[in-house]
Length: 247
Length: 268
Image (cartoon, rainbow over all chains, first blue to last red):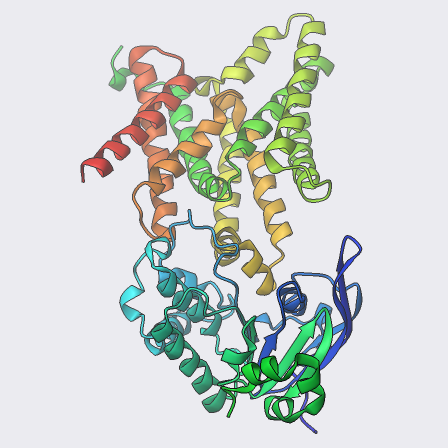
């Protein structure tokens, strides 16, 4: 393959207080990949994601982003991130949706471009009517869409989502995933979606990254579903559950 | 004496002038401190500054010369204890401020005759401010406003979601260091105006008042400065008219403004 990987992980290990959270994992992600990052609870999915984003330090191995070592990487606006709902947002802060979305945009962009980009992403996600509302007054689903707008406003080439569907009702969840699929197909945005439910993401992702502290499987979803080895590893029942939505 | 006659005095002009500059600083910095749950930082740093001023008086040098670096050092020590030594932020503030005030009390007890000066730093007196002190506070206000305008997005992003801000490549620890350094400078330079006991309330109350209005972040920041200005000017005028201690009157007017806004918001 001649394309440059957007993310290249090499022999990555991460430990907390001598407890290994991620062990010797290597893989590469390219433009237009839609990767389901799955594994059981405590498998290290969020730790892996946080390490790629520079929120955790690797114990061993390396992370390369857009061909650059993570330590030298500066174009963070080319990466979108939707954290888990319960994370670090300061709900005391009286920010409007418009203000929250605009905070991802680098200072180098002029005011007009900032305004137009914010308007465009709110429109795309169907939440223009929320633009002047305070973030703290929104429902769980509305907050999720506002935070997705924050992640998408710079039109990132790479998008990380950590359990994004947790706060959404089934209908909103389908709309949300359809939007991700559209972004992936039409704009070539590479998407890495962390989920504990590999079966659900099977309907959308074309690659599966399954970890349980160490790497269990990384490759095409279709290949995973045909793999005898994976069938043996997961057992026929679980293997079928993971694959039944993948077409 | 009525307010018109009082307005003819230079010391009154200086008091209003320095009050305006202090309000611009406190209204701006205070909002970030309150939202980042660092309200106690002002109180802790006022104690550090008091200890440093006492040391300055004890060794016989101009108190600001020693209080500015020591208060900044105290602020950075609080941040260090919080981040590196895994001490909770409020506990780190408690440790550093208690040590400073204890040192200040011991130095004051060993001194010969500067207790009156110490009292003026404890309770402050805006009416005794000199023109050079007004200029220093004006320069600080200009510095704080410049930092906030220039790093507005960075400060806002870090305050809204520190972890997400890090994924944008923002050095949030540097942002915190800048914020506490600005706060330390403010406290060190303004305790003579408001007093070590009262300065933290001037930092916190305008922000808390502005937050009651439920406006956007940018508007809340503007409202915070406006409430600080109204309460400061109102407080100075009331203290001149009623001949009450200025620092304490300013603080009570801040509290009254908060009370009025809370009442209006509840009625609405």
